[in-house]
Amino acid sequence: MMRLTIVLVLLLCCAGQVMATEEFAEQSGHDCGYCHLDPSGGGELSVQGQAFVATQAEAGTPVVPSGFARLLRLLIGYLHLFTAVFWFGTIFYVHLVLKPAYASKGLPRGEVRVGLVSMAVMATTGLYLTWLRLGSWQSLLDTRFGMLLLVKLGLFAIMVSMAMLAVFVVGPRLRRRVASNSKIELGDMTSEQLALCDGLEDRPACFAFKGKIYDASQSSMWKKGQHMQRHSAGGDLTAALGQAPHGEDRVMRLPEVGSLLASISEAGERPKKQFFFLAYLNLVLAFAILFVVALWRWA
Figure 1 (tube, rainbow, N blue to C red):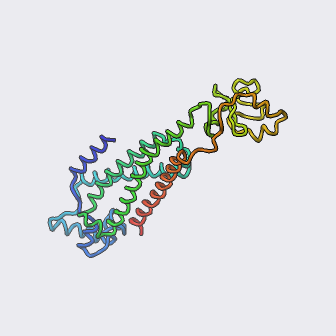
Figure 2 (figure 1 turned 45 degrees about the vertical axis):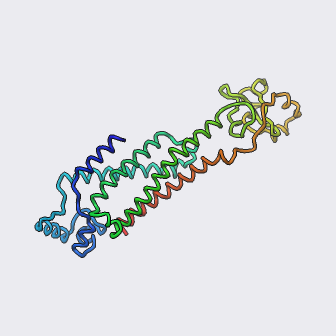
Figure 3 (figure 1 turned 90 degrees about the vertical axis):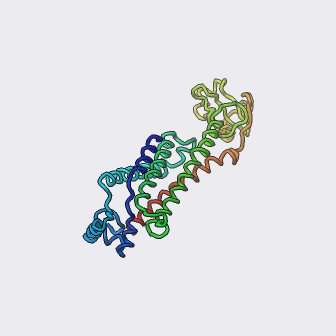
């Protein structure tokens, strides 16, 4: 990623600037659709646009960049568009198809890399393309394109900030939360920790009964975490064993190892809630950026 960023910065430094379309509109007194076939500007020129280019060339102020500059702009623009489609496509697939819950135990490293590289590429290429399009920073406030670009940049900045928060703050908290719930230590347990004691793959076979946790790992009646093929270890069996043909004394014979904690504390749930908030906020921001692009191109 660092090498790619350095290359793009070098290209930015060596490329020649192109006057902004909005400035041409001010000179000619017409909107973008007068000189371009596309009403929003850019792309193929109309007859009037070709005449304007010829007039500027005769006056010694050509408005058409050199062949190399046009090729460079095309390549950078393609990279910017490709990265945007790739990144936004990942966001939509993860949030609308897989759902954010699949990553609630920690952000997958592959998606973290995709997000960080995409943000770096989009920021660098977007800066280059903006520099080409705008003749002055004042155009950001004086032109419709500039104002929409400011809105788009603001939304992108919020997305980047939320992503950084998710990767470097909320993500580690999620992993620590999962790690703490994944440790099998006989004693007081939450329902999530008790669920790991299912008697399979050499894990202990424990269950809760009337608020107490019992270890049935050494009982011949609880082989592989199953009792009479009806009850499974790893959960609260108060209601189920209360209807069993034998009395509570059978349960009391098993080693009592701790108590069942009522629920995970609010502090333990907070990272998960924060992650869901950031995930859906980024989804909303992605839709908002696409709407701004639609306004720029077709409104």
